Amino acid sequence: MKLFVDTANTEEIRKANDLGVICGVTTNPSLIAREGLEFKSVIKEITEIVDGPISAEVISLEAPKMVEEALELAKIHKNIVIKLPMTEEGLKATKQLTAKGIKTNVTLIFSAAQALLAARAGATYVSPFLGRLDDIGTEGMQLVRDIAEIFDIHGIETEIIAASVRSPLHVVDAAKAGAHIATVPYNVIIQMTKHPLTDNGIQRFLKDWEGLEQKLN
Ligand code: E4P
Image 1: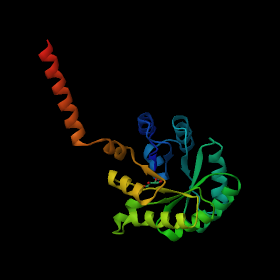
Image 2: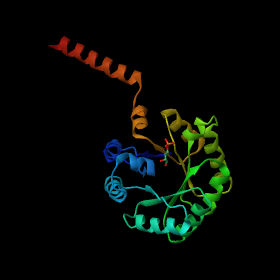
Image 3: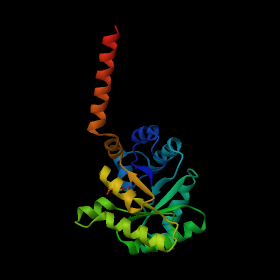
Image 4: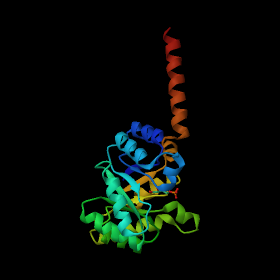
């Protein structure tokens, strides 16, 4: 399973990229708004940091307007992936953009039926939202398992991006459930690096090394 970083904060993207563990970025209108910067310039800056798929989401709700916005966004860089909401209009726009050779990420997926429709409309990626399903007392990970099973049975090439990831356990479980990619907030990537036994181990190695140096001097 590949990892993307789920943020529009370019400092976090730079730091995640420097770790060498991510190969793409997802943004959404809320994440862009949090940065308080102009949309297209943020997206452009992100494309200059990470050489991989960068999801930029349209705001319009009607297919023709979505396509218009998407065509403008796609001009920014060849790595731009157009993120579209899982609606009837979003499906129509997905079909049209796919026909034009533009990659799409159908977002706000909360059921396997929605994922199947998005895939059949030609989506490059579907994004099931784990955390938001967990929040309403439904097991988000079961959705990833179901989509992975359906795509596998029917040889569907659309990739599953586990989204709305809240913890390292989500990432591990998404990998076991068959997600192709997890898009992970920067703070969760950092949590993934940590284990108390790693810290203890380093301390012990350093202490033993100092002991050796003292013996030899
Ligand atoms: C995915 O592409 C979305 O940007 C994101 O994962 C949403 O996560 P949230 O539910 O934490 O807002």
